[in-house]
Each structure stands twice: as structure tokens, then as C-alpha cells.
Length: 259
Image (cartoon, rainbow, N blue to C red; front, side, top):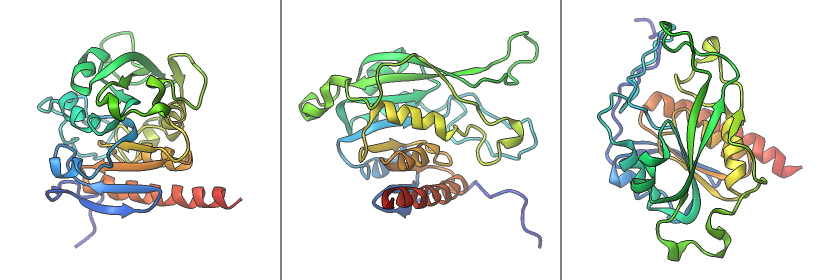
């Protein structure tokens, strides 16, 4: 029997998930982020929610990469409501970044106060609908400030003013992987993009949480920026790839700290 050409990604995670990796820098759980027993494992009063949930677009590969359909990407899951459960453990007045959903879809379920739309300029044209003359070259990200549990915010929260960068524009230009480089995950986000978001809303040592982690680009960026990461991914193959990437990032972070 020959080995399969692609990873088997149809395994269902156990109730409560399974910790695949845990260090002082990062935790990666193979699990269902809709599972209350998984949600309870995220530390209380974490510092940033940064995630790219399925958009309900029914993504399918058209480039022969043999990616499996993404769990929950068929429109059957109320992702704002799911993320609302995760937002309940976010420290008040800290920040949220969610790809693909508008502020009015997220404000109530996530308990957000001020929101803003960020545009990720991918600097290259995507495929999109070839029957129209305009092709997609950007993706939207909603930024929000949590207003849940105001008694738990603390002075350091400063009602959303805690940032490592000065006020900046709402367009972020980072090259996306082109079709020939999309090998790990169909909607993989560039680490430099995630690093910009993380730098703008956290300081070193803060905990960054991604409940829809994919191959853990958010976690990799967090570790490289001196933050801590808590990542959950439903598909076992993607979670294992994420662990490999996190471990490589931790080695780099260790070398940086040693200098």
C-alpha cells in the first residue's frame, strides 16, 4: 500500500479537545472551538482575540491542491455567536480582530464598543468571479474594543488605548501567498500581516487567542513578537502543521531572548 498524497483531515477531535503542544510561549489544541469544554481551557482575562473564522462561503480548491472542505464553512454555523463565547473571557477594553465579518454582525454577540473596518490590501489580483471585470485584491477585517466585564479591565486597559504602535491608517498592505505558494491551508494568512495586528494591540508577554487557528499563523506571529499564543484548530492535519510552525517560531524566539 502506498502512502496517500494528502493528509487525512477528516478526523473528529475528542470532546474537550487534545493538547498537541504546550509551553510557556504557546498552547495548540486540536479541538472544536464550539465545544464549551474547549472554551473553558482558555485563560480568563486574556489580552487579544484575533481570528479568521470560516465565512460560510463553502470554499473549494480550484487549483488542484486537494484541500478538504473547511469545517463550518457551509453557512450552517453562527460564527459571531461562537466567537461571542470566546469574547466573554477577553479582558475588558482589550481588542478583537475578526476576518470576513462586518462590525454590525459582531458588535452585539461579541460585546464590542467602538469598531472599525481594516482593509487588507493583498497587492495582487485574486481569481474571484471571472464573469465580472473586477477581481478581488483585498479582504476586510473588523477591529473592535471589548466592553464585556468592565470591572475586570484594569487601569492598563485604558478603554482600548493600549497599543504598541501609534494611530495608523485602516489599509494594511501585505502580499498574500500566490496560488503556487498556498500549500499548507487554503486561507492561510501571512505572518507579517498577523504581526502588524498583534503589535498594534498588545505588548510583550500578552496572551493572543485564535480559536480558528488553521496552521497557526496568528500563533507564530505572536511568538515571534514576544507574546504568548493560545490556538485551537478543528482539523487534525492543520493543527499538526501549526504545531511544527509554532515550534520553529519558539526556537527563533529563544535565540532572540538569548542575545
